[in-house]
Image (cartoon, rainbow, N blue to C red; front, side, top):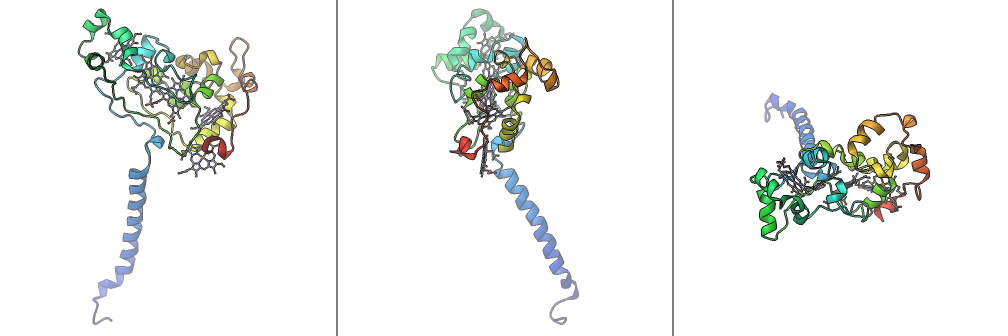
Amino acid sequence: MSALFPKWMNALPTLGAGAAFFGLIGVVWGTWYWATPDYTRVGYMPTQPGTGFNHQLHAGQLGIDCRYCHTNVEKSPEANIPNVATCMGCHAEERLRNWDIHRVGFVREAYAEDRSIEWRRIHKLPDYVRNFPHDAHVKAGVSCFSCHGQIMGMPVVYQAEGLHMGWCLDCHRNPEKHMVPPEKVTDLVWVETEWLARPVAGRNYNGVTPQQLVDSLRRSPPQTCGACHH
Ligand code: HEC
Ligand code: HEC
Ligand code: HEC
Ligand code: HEC
Ligand code: HEC
């Protein structure tokens, strides 16, 4: 043996193990990096078409209610993105046209050419989560804030929550922490600064408390596999 192989080669098994170890880290990292789907990526913020759409300006400063544009959020299991006609309700106006002719040009062009704007989707559950009824949550009094973050302060929307199974179940086990009076679900600044900022026991809105909101649910939030996966 010693005649055939130089002495330094004795270290090879150790080097091999080291290489395998780092190789494994590489594989784990690679899998995480390439295979982690978008729905678990907190902070995911794709570049939107044109100059984008500014929620801080429209929902925060101008005070347009979420449901003016997202008309389905409490009516359908799927939320919706508004079409260009909704934007033109305001942006056809001469006054706004002149102010922001360059920044809203892409909206008016799309409308003139009768095509939709290809907004890039941010929140997306994997297909094997068969049942996420968006409307049931909003109607029950879970604020957009709990699931999407402070949209009224976002010039560009990003994913604020991980949307993983443990996240759904955490809230389903302890919903009272997240319940807000249903008429306040879209008042995100109030929800963050006036309601959720207080301890659960100190929350009271015109006599309504978190426990009463939980008691008024049609049924408790489900924890059985079939409720979300069928
Ligand atoms: C004037 C119309 C308008 C109003 C008002 C509005 N939005 Fe939006 N929203 C849009 C448009 C257009 C998009 C798609 C572009 C983008 O993602 O920025 C969008 C995207 C979103 C998304 C990301 C959807 C995805 O792809 O996952 C969320 C979440 C959202 N809005 C929540 C809200 C909330 C909460 C409010 C109220 C505080 C609100 N929006 C008010 C027009 C509006
Ligand atoms: C209820 C009225 C209203 C609606 C509906 C509305 N906007 Fe606006 N938008 C405004 C006003 C007011 C401004 C601010 C103009 C200014 O300050 O110069 C503005 C500004 C903008 C700007 C330029 C500022 C910036 O941040 O880039 C863009 C782009 C824009 N809107 C896109 C949209 C799109 C896309 C929609 C539809 C999803 C939409 N708006 C719906 C009222 C509206
Ligand atoms: C209980 C959590 C929860 C609440 C509350 C909630 N959302 Fe969502 N929302 C989600 C999830 C999860 C998705 C992705 C759904 C999917 O992929 O099927 C989503 C998707 C969306 C989308 C994207 C729809 C599309 O087709 O691209 C919009 C817009 C939206 N929500 C707006 C809102 C608004 C506005 C409110 C408040 C009125 C709200 N959401 C309340 C969890 C929530
Ligand atoms: C912040 C709190 C919260 C989060 C996060 C949340 N839920 Fe819920 N969920 C609720 C509440 C509250 C109800 C009860 C609604 C009712 O009884 O009307 C509910 C009810 C449901 C129901 C039953 C609806 C019905 O009509 O009986 C399903 C299915 C569901 N949630 C799926 C999900 C999934 C999937 C996720 C994660 C992607 C999720 N939820 C995240 C609070 C939440
Ligand atoms: C409240 C809704 C909800 C309930 C109840 C639920 N799940 Fe899930 N589950 C999800 C969501 C959302 C995802 C996707 C996000 C993720 O992978 O964490 C998921 C993902 C999964 C995955 C894929 C995990 C992965 O990492 O790829 C499996 C397996 C799974 N669930 C099994 C179950 C089983 C078994 C039960 C019953 C003990 C169950 N789920 C109950 C919402 C739910």
